[in-house]
Image 1 (cartoon, one colour):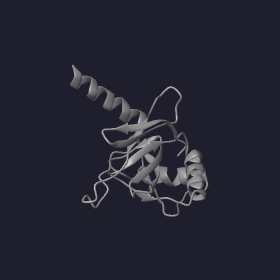
Image 2 (tube, helix red, strand yellow):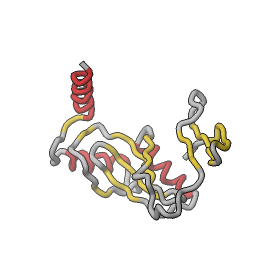
Image 3 (spheres, one colour):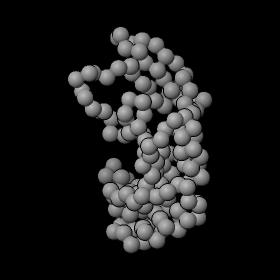
Length: 153
């Protein structure tokens, strides 16, 4: 995913690896070695990473395929286009890009990133216009900002 090891070491017997994609951030993710055998499942629901555009999402999928990732879930949530895949420890990873729209969540419609950006965008827009909570993401963000501001005062 383009992360680089910025530091690593042992703390209380556990190996830690610090990862970053930004020279201004010592770390954005810290991985700790090991998972208790008795867990039997991933204790992480998902780890999500935002990318800049739908074309960037397509490029990331191609890069992951070249690294041997074969199984993807490709979906539009109305407010985002996403790909999901499992990391080597079977944790769910999401890479997504925002759309300009908002609809009530949860929502997930399959998409095919092999289609053109224009076709994916048009199909998503047609779909979201029929969904509860449809509006612009900008309006939704303004509403949430107001709610958070009111709660803080």
